[in-house]
Length: 429
Image (tube, rainbow, N blue to C red; front, side):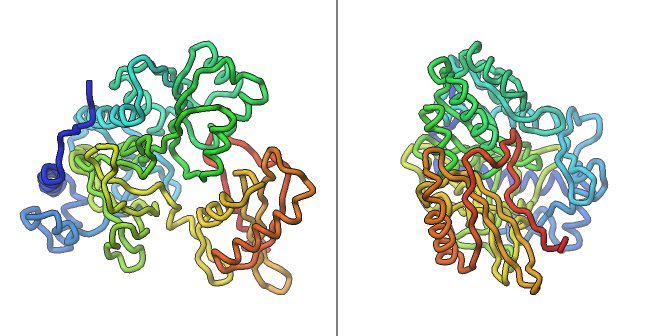
């Protein structure tokens, strides 16, 4: 069974998007008091949307809107049509709760199955799922998509390393799904326990946090996998599975028959040209329970300007480069952790794990200390040279001075969840 419509052309995709946008506008205007008030305040009616360009007439939705009408914000169906809820952490202590109809769950499972097809899986694969279950969307999303695709799901969640190692061997797992931090932790455990000859993992699908090329390279080196794929998604957009990069890794193919992706300048709120980085804004085209209209994700990426030679009919966006709300200001310079990550990944002799510590001197002047692990096979005698090289590259690329401390490989914490990169101690000074 194929889940990717390879016969879909650009014009057909635009027609689907326009029809979906018009349906969504009518649906939310008729069934959501939140959206009706928002559109009335902006002087917009559903019939005003006559082309895809008209999407720019619509007001933005933001994470703060998900606090309105808690616990069912953006609800656009009767309560009796809601069959499940998922939630993620909120900005004011309340979780962001999203509701799902049965159709929403079916749509989600179907486009998640596309991700497995895009990664080249078959029904003979065995998929070990190491992401969280419960209120979070990750675990159940990976599992439902796997079952819809027809492969075998091994639903462990973020269990301990002993259990994962045991199941990797006993279940003859071929595909491992996790955060990048969890994949690195497991790769190191497999190497430490000398299990590489006993496992059959050939592909890894990573989600929930951005990761560097250095981290990918280290995981591949330790686990000997053929491919690592990057999956995208947010709880607000159903969950993970809104797109995946193909084996050419030119960018993440996103399912544009279910979403309209825009990239805007986060200050001017105007669209940026294809290829330019900005904030990702998403509109859902078929979501019933909690539709999104021009939702500001605060994820930084760019729309790729050309189609992929793999033949998939869907456009691509870049891997997530950072978040607008993860940005920190150091000596009047706006910096994303991903910029530091990018510099580090191009310095030979250091590992993929790092931390950024922001402090304030007695003089009141800010200082930035970057702790970065030495590569597994690098010599400690090279530390001074490596630290100088990293500091020089950061000054050259980001235009700020920093102190760099090279520390032992494996000394920074490994986690099955997202790794914390930035520690701002300045407010505690």
